[in-house]
Length: 218
Image (cartoon, rainbow, N blue to C red; front, side, top):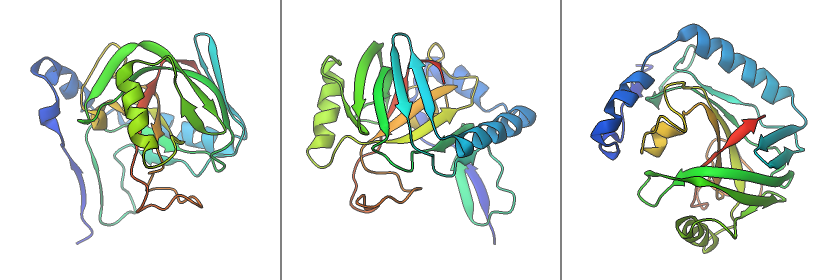
């Protein structure tokens, strides 16, 4: 039947004081999403070097990126596909995962219960695509240890959220929703089902933990 659908998911992860923010995320500015989404895709697809700046830190991607995917609620020409509200995201990852080096500041990350944890920004170090954070909060250290028990803490997804209704000062606990926040998020762990990488089997990789970067400029 060539069904296309967008679902509301994980609503129970939000607290009542966040309902109004969530409702605002559902507003659909077609011109903004289509114009900005397409422009960012062109930039990412043609880039050979991406520089991410936080206050006092620099992270360099010195690899071409994978073909960027759009999550803007438009499934024209697609069959039997779907997504989740809220919408608004362009994402990719480096073709060579080892070509990511430098530091970032993280202000939030997904907890074990898939709810976002918010902290004062802390520094994480990335060397050849592997993240460490010796001075991070204990809860984040515990998350890294959980990943390391099965696989390396590989930095994979490079996700640019477009939804202007969510951000550092407009919070939603559910990570599925908050990753659409207008800013940059990355995934930690070997799991990213969209892109195939040698040595990282889609079925065997276990972790895809989103972290949110206190980004100043890209």
